[in-house]
Length: 511
Image (cartoon, rainbow, N blue to C red):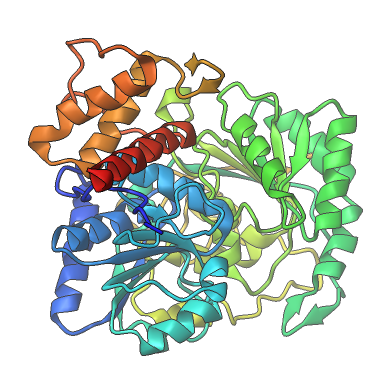
């Protein structure tokens, strides 16, 4: 029996097209190179939300692929696989495999694999010279154990590398930028903080110094009516993410949002894969009828919908600053296309008050050592006997003020772009198969594939033949691969190309 390689062509990685890197991204990339030259096999890249962690990771992988190396990009959850694959496609890195047996893009022989940690836990790791691990602060045993024995270079990506033991895995820390610098440059938007009706956590049960999920959920149930009412009053026109303490807590909040006429849905570990896809497809629409998504932590890491303009924090924490920063960061990406100017944080948890000092330090300076991050997630922040209010900034009155005011930058030359409002609130189908949206979209996919799998001088002809194979006609003469952007390739188009490759290989073998 003859086995035919999934992709019969030799991958062409030289023709990938990355956006022009921002200055801080260029610096971070060079610091990773220098770290490797200095002998650091495992390096951690700390990059805040919006700084382009995936871009930086894929750029490092592209450099390795150009030198004939093999690379693996590891996502910490299966839900982020498609997102990462689509980004790779958009950069022209279409010659990659998704390492899942039932995935339409699976190709074990590819030099570039995108895999989830869950899949790698059940399979043999592919050979690799470079491994990039997304959300590396989540120390999953499958990669932690592998890193100890592999000779591959490893780059961890994280906005919050605070978890215990990272300093024993990664010997070099590279900080790409600070949240403050990204806000000033317009990569992030300023955050307005509103102190809302707060979950009263006095006397609540704890475990390991942190409030238990059950205790936080029970106390949170008492203010759900306030959460809905205050969101409707102050953020009703804003696409929103709400973080709750447990799945049951999120489900009850979603029920009350829907009862109030606001379309809301839960996105949790209980949400089925096909339901997640449907929810995200709808939620990503600029004019989505789905206004509110609720989650415990499934949306806190790697979730990217730039036009989210409000985050409701109803998940009280007193130790995990990293969790808080991840939650708040879901609303901080800029979205020029939709005219987004800021993110509204409705603080129902008191987290912004308890963590003000440490958050302001991270906001302005990031980390200078991984061990410092570990300390931040071990520190227990206690409420006073009375309801915590937080000290106001003596310059602008922002409350709460940390070691440095994140509203006016008190005791600093430059002011931050964060505001605060004081006080409490109350309230192309062809035949029967769709290959593309239209013929131009089909051409873009054909060009993207040709760019990834054909030598430069053959790309125009290759793309044209793919287009003709599907439509029965040649593309418009004005369409060129050189002037066509890279786009994600649909399953139908890739399957058509795949069957064409196999038929060609069979004919050649028969001859």
